[in-house]
Length: 503
Ligand code: ZN
Ligand code: MG
Ligand code: ZN
Image 1: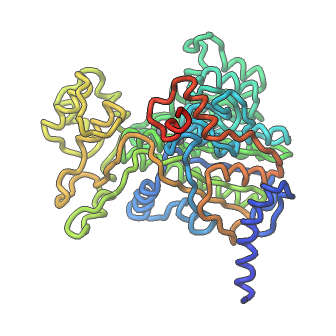
Image 2 (image 1 turned 90 degrees about the vertical axis):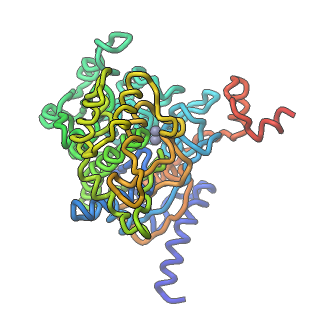
């Protein structure tokens, strides 16, 4: 064996050894990969698949003239794939996926750091807090949304966001930045509680605008910049929506957290890649990935300057399964969609708000011309009017989609494969799908290692090892979970195990 091969074998053994060492409860430090990290950054893409990546990568190279930071990450670091199935479904949603990352065990879709029988799980950032680490959450969703929440709190209902805002106050992370004013505002909360005042009373600077974010000067920071989710990057950039970018929030969070003596843990989430894919909105998806890339670059720069930081990236599941499909003779027009995306200057969400309740064929046609750079036929414009005013959706729009948005997407689909005049991007549905996703690690000591295909729960192993934490959450079997669901009559489909168990 050549020396280089011995080294390679050693590195691979280090990875395999790490897994078995975890099982045996052995010391966590293995050579070759993931020496202890003082700081941890978990960078989540919600609902991003590999075709999303490809579209953004080609757009970035062709139109912006540079490769994605994500491409650089994947080329230089340790990357692979992660399986995303939840405990009882091959198609996960964001809380079960977040739980797999944050607790290391599979759960049923729908709850935060909790099993379906009510057993609470301890998420990774709660463990890190016990070590004295500072904690930060940054997201373009409501900050109380499933992915960030699954890293810090336990709740049987991912949608209990008013309650989760209270749980955040009790948890006491140093940084919360995202959307979701309606869960903090006393005028909107059902209990009329002024969460802004509550956070301020505990020493948080409270920011609601980009200017306030910039000016905030305290060791703890709550920033909520929109009533619900932070508007899409394509609208922020081209329609002058006044919210901070994911990169701006990231750049604000890092120095606050880095000031803590014991180090920090931070989750950054590009949350709305998922939402844009649900709506089958190619431009919104693209620009949110490009915005995420600026935040990722900031995180990578921080790691380069602070090598005792480990950066993990991942996507929690695929959504909509979009693809840039071949167009033209022998696909020679396959790149046309990338060029046409350049003409899109707003999201379908933005268009729906603009159209209001009483759109006309004329207002729809004009809006598609100015926002999407597309000339609709009168029939297509009428389909949009019917979707909004009569809830008549294009039947083939998507399988179980989100309406009327999916009809707005469907009318601008490519119809002539030989004559590309629309982005040649198609979707499977408006729903999450089952495929494996992006997974990668960046930081000192990981550059020579390999990971390959892992389960999404492996992220918890990586994080606990890096932080020197030894902890195992209780494991629930699929069968046990199915029993609970069955007892609640929450098994509407014919699960193959049912026949066996009920027989
Ligand atoms: Zn998700
Ligand atoms: Mg999310
Ligand atoms: Zn989703």
